[in-house]
Length: 238
Ligand SMILES: [Zn+2]
Image 1 (cartoon, rainbow, N blue to C red):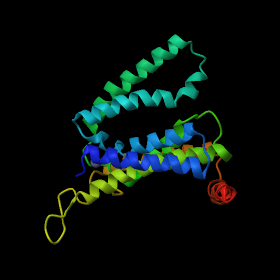
Image 2 (image 1 turned 60 degrees about the horizontal axis):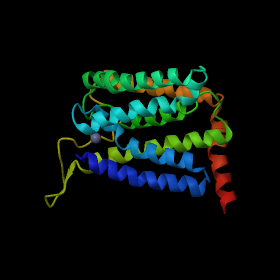
Image 3 (image 1 turned 135 degrees about the vertical axis):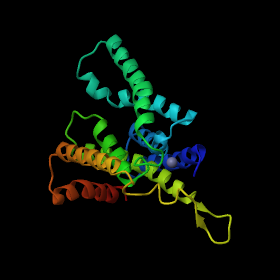
């Protein structure tokens, strides 16, 4: 299987590409472009949150504990907290994610379980789509930005799954053979129907929230809102 540094190098390179694409093609400001680049790089590490040990994993929970409250910044601001209260909330969220959530993960997840799967990738994308400034309706330009960030994290995530699969092929022999992890990364379900069920329930729940937050569009409207602005943005660049 691919190591931590292979994953982070690949997803960081993809992150730079995603950021550059957003800045040049969609003319997003540097804030959105850099955020997308960072999310893409982070996406490449996310699937290995399920491994029980190792500094990278602890590091990741540290990063997540720091990033999640920041991404919820707009929502927190609605509570009119004083700067001191805001700091306390940030510190509390950090400790909760870094120690509470990571301990929960350690107990319930199986390495190379549903965390290494296509639905988990879509969940990561939907979570990013919904997390960043959840107070406003996701339409028009906002929708385009959200999709861009969500696609970024999913590209990083996918690079991880694909790398894990590639490294499952043993190229030492003349005929490539598959090692024990083959087929365990890019997959739609796992052996545990409970894990599979929970994953798809979360996917359905977040999908529903995303659908509501964009004004419950029909398929035709969703196509109009998502594909059309992008193609018009593309033609205006030319
Ligand atoms: Zn992995």
